[in-house]
Length: 408
Ligand SMILES: NC(=O)c1ccc[n+]([C@@H]2O[C@H](COP(=O)([O-])OP(=O)(O)OC[C@H]3O[C@@H](n4cnc5c(N)ncnc54)[C@H](OP(=O)(O)O)[C@@H]3O)[C@@H](O)[C@H]2O)c1
Image (cartoon, rainbow, N blue to C red; front, top):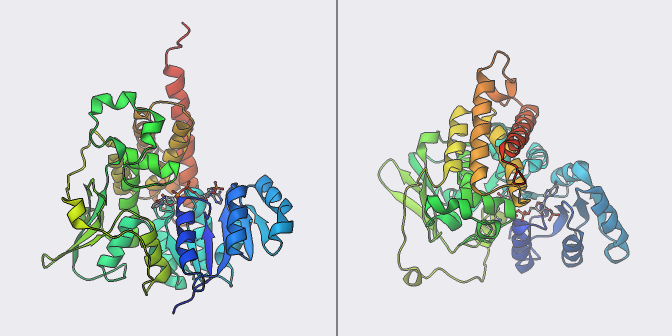
């Protein structure tokens, strides 16, 4: 039995909770060194009670203080704070395996710290590879860190490749996408979409940011970029098909015409268990796939008019350098504003489209920011991300100021 001591970054989120659900079924195999979150003190306190980590990190200072005040009950757990705390637990010698389950670009530095420390790293936090995929993968090769894809589609590809990120003779990788809640809605009706509808994913239960990204299909665009670096594939070898049943998570086609697919019910605990147990398997008593119940498996191409954000992500991938990081930063900013009821659903892609045009103009300007041309180090990724955020903020402000004042 392969025992691993874990650090779970983002333990209070959708991925984190599913990771701990799997851990709870195999407690003897997965002692917890550290749990980390942003500010959800109540959930963290409950997790400390159950899993007794040596360390808990709250990114938010006030939340860390509140957690410390609960210490009489959680006395054996040290409470750390901020990015410093995240970096410490991600690289701690006591940890064998780090789950990168934080949402967004803020997860880049802790994932990087884990890679630099040569850990086994389960990557759910896809933004890490979107920001600096080439760098992360090459650093992992140098430090001996093992990158395990926790995202279901990438985990599926990994399984199709026999538990590897490389394999000879791969001709094409197909990632599937559910198409989100609006796959059957006429594009003319998109103007009336409410936030509640956008948050109601038909097949998966996930955090709010990735759920909105699934509705726009930006998520799948980010996943294509993630797959590119993780599996070392040129963009033209990665395809996406809409598969509304979310049963086939990915397919790999080889030079000889063989196609290997990975199937399973849409439950993140399955790819999570595959990562935690790697290279072994652990038992999970979950409902099993019954293909007679599913009946049919359908696949369709991705229609451009319905999912413009997906095609913006592909455009960013082809532009290369820091453009994916820029688009990701812009997307995080725009989605956060959308979740705050700032504008209608259709504006997400419209604003991102404008950001991409501005980025294109900047790249062609007399003094283009060097981070747009290449990500030479973490600092470039952070700079490109920040540029995307500021272009998004500027574009959202312009969009607001152009709107007619309803009072006039
Ligand atoms: N959910 C899924 O099924 C799924 C599937 C595949 C991939 N992913 C990817 O996995 C990542 C997590 O997604 P999710 O759905 O689990 O998101 P989520 O439910 O929103 O959870 C996000 C987690 O990150 C923590 N966090 C946010 N900012 C932080 C910071 N600055 N420092 C420390 N922790 C921070 C949150 O803490 P608080 O609770 O304290 O805010 C929470 O624990 C995303 O990159 C997503 O794309 C998710």
